[in-house]
Image (cartoon, rainbow, N blue to C red):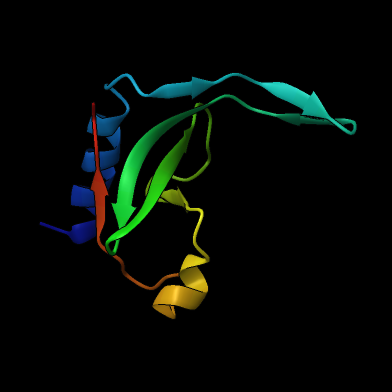
Length: 88
């Protein structure tokens, strides 16, 4: 089975769970769409994942953290990391 297919199914399954919802809002003449967030661990660092309610990307996972993860982990776009999502 292709990795991309597996990851796409994981994201699809994750969207069926209830997370922390941040509703659409406007700031400085720009609209930000609604997202669902889940607490997560990224390579052992505290953080969260953000799933836009509407997106053009099927296998992109956005991670946020109070830590500067690119610097701490030495990663760039496209690098692999371990993400553990907490559903409760």
